[in-house]
Each structure stands twice: as structure tokens, then as C-alpha cells.
Image (cartoon, rainbow, N blue to C red; front, side, top):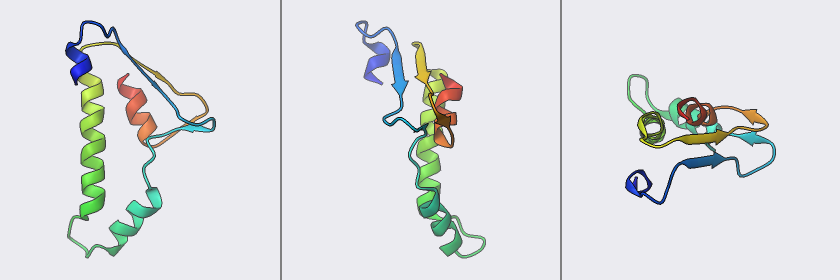
Length: 87
């Protein structure tokens, strides 16, 4: 958030760390296991916290006051779509 008010920063560049895909790195298997282990009618804590962080970041990207470029090479999936959609 400091970059948003820093006059020396004109924009933000998001790029993948690997060569194969652009995703946020969410552990889908771990999230699924936590959901399945949670009794019916209860909210699983780990997935709830994960998606809260992800959606807050997506909102920040959508409302950021400076340009954001998201370079999605390869397969774009999961949280990578959320990052890319707001850029």
C-alpha cells in the first residue's frame, strides 16, 4: 500500500515465478481436505481465512490508484485469474 502513495512508483508489474503457470499458489488439496473435515453446517477456518485474504487482495487490485500490469504467460488458473482480472 505504500507504493500507492509513493510518487517514485508509476505502476506495479505482476509476473509468475515459474515457467509453467500463473496462479496464486493456493493449496487446493489442503483446502479441500479442510472443507471435508469440517462438520456440516460449520465454516472451515483455514479455507475461510485463505479466501478472505485472496478476495481482499483482489479488491485492492481492482481499486488500486496506479496501473497494474499482470503478465499471465502459460496456464492461468485459480487465484491467478483473480489477480489478472483486476489488473
